Length: 309
Image 1: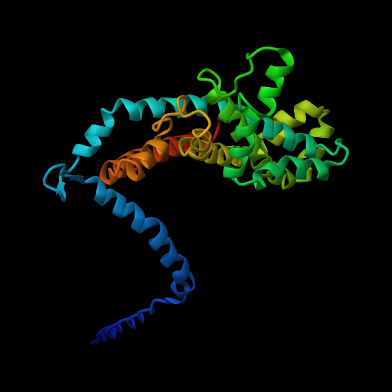
Image 2: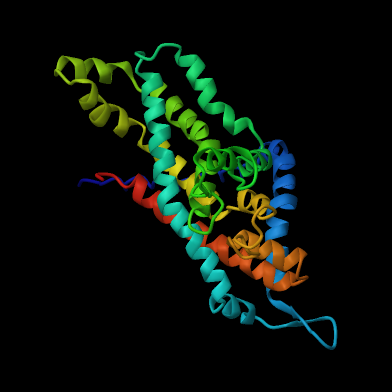
């Protein structure tokens, strides 16, 4: 007679110890708190306040303001003055920005080539106009462009003609573009030059082994390597073009019949607010331009950073 032993009963598994909940560390926020406070007061708060203003409208006869919702935005989108000024800065952007960036890129490549004598001197000379305040630059070039004084007047007197008129209706936008190009070529040149200096030397050695010449190295090595810098400079230039204000606003004192109060969208918003006391409509113009600028800059960024292009 055989007896079978009962199988041992397994002991019940002990529950795993509950993970101790980690306390969130707020020390990082303490370090960025001063910046966040300044950022909120100088950027977020004004934008929110401008948006709130854009939802109201002054009552002409009864005083006070009344909530109108999106009526101000509909009025801006149907405003011929706004679209005329927007079209003007769009043309300015399409012509001036490529020329400025091309000149800056050529200057950066020339200085980086190590074949230019006194490269440090030329780098400082090209960058120096950026150190000149925009108001001072506009005043200086305004006196150069003057029809009755300055270089343009002297040339007309020397040639016995009045053909040189940089501040005329046909040449004014080109003259402003020349001022902006003079101011910001050095700034963009420095962006490109800084990007060129961090390209790995191994890429140039590989290009030299493959027998690449100077231009082949530029188009196959240098330009692809600084693509990110080109995108950044392009975005900054687009934003700056849509914010065009100082140069035409200063030169307006010289040719008030040529430069009107709505020559650029920023001038339009400024004059609506400080000359016309239309704060609500001015805020609406500013919000619309901000949105358009952000959308275009974002599209350029997506196109510029897309791989395989």
